[in-house]
Length: 196
Ligand code: GRF
Image (cartoon, rainbow, N blue to C red; front, side):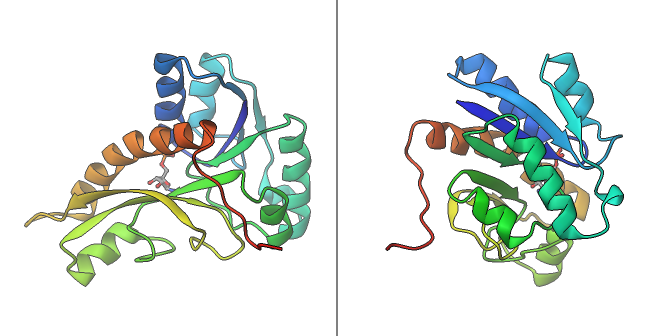
């Protein structure tokens, strides 16, 4: 199976996925790591691990539609069975998402449906929730609203700051995302938008 990973920054989730696949000898090939930012740190790890990288700078495109079309062409050049969004900080258009229906996953740092969007740790603290966490979900056109396939929960502790909570959640993301991808590869996750 071919996996293409999209990211915009640090890439710690990508790293956790690649390491899990190597350690578990998964029957996969990481065909490419693609970033919309040329300086994304995650690209360095990919290159050091022999994974092809590509950059599709969103700034080069006049519209979201044009960017998504270019991105799609680059991704499809690698014939992915699964597209993994790992800290990819762009909102994707409906035609793009529909093209990958059932084979595109994202990880979001909250217990969806709570706190879609940005600044999830700050908002969880402000809301005074007792538990927080991360969710892996299939990507659909509505941001952070696709069907959830796996969640990891952490407690919110007295004295927590945005940073301490972020670190606690991220550690769980690094376990959760490889786990969810493994389920997908084993054919144990599926998503169908419409039953016809
Ligand atoms: C993670 O918190 C992930 O949940 C969110 O963006 C962050 C990416 O971190 N979507 P990294 O680039 O994987 O280190």
